[in-house]
Image (cartoon, rainbow, N blue to C red; front, side):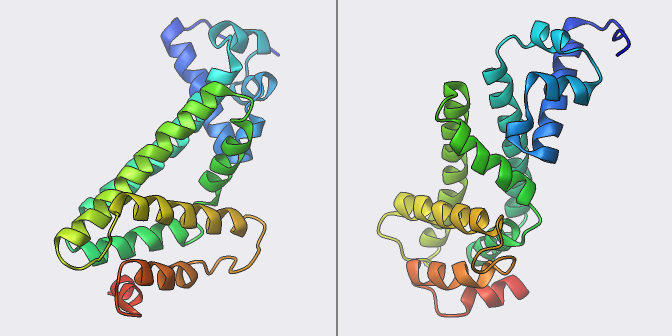
Length: 206
């Protein structure tokens, strides 16, 4: 491999972090290794080790970069939808349509790898909190508008997050509902929030 051109340290560090992120999206979080990042960035492994001596932290950074970007994208989509029921329908459709399986794989691997990587585990907890907060805001807006009924909005948000994660993880191996995940969850969510059967399906189609 030819010697990498000299770059300012901050620029090189950012370049390698971006390579780790792209590698995680393309091949999964388990692919974010010293040699894997070096190959992705076309540099020597020693250069990666120099700028990112703690690979656990680079893996955690790659995870955060991937999932935080998705969170911001979804948050932007929801902000454009004023009606709480429509907003919930958009949330479910967006997260269950199957177009984000690359991010789902990053999540699934992070839960497993986080058992032995505390930096990653901390990042996973932070991002799960952020997702729960977003879903909670949707539920609370619906309750405040009188559209939803939830005795414990925070618990409902956690439950909804777990259901979304579970269905998406199962779909990675084409089990159960596979690519048609929406109807499975929509019926359960309508029951959880006291919505008339078919409300979210109709909202998603409008």
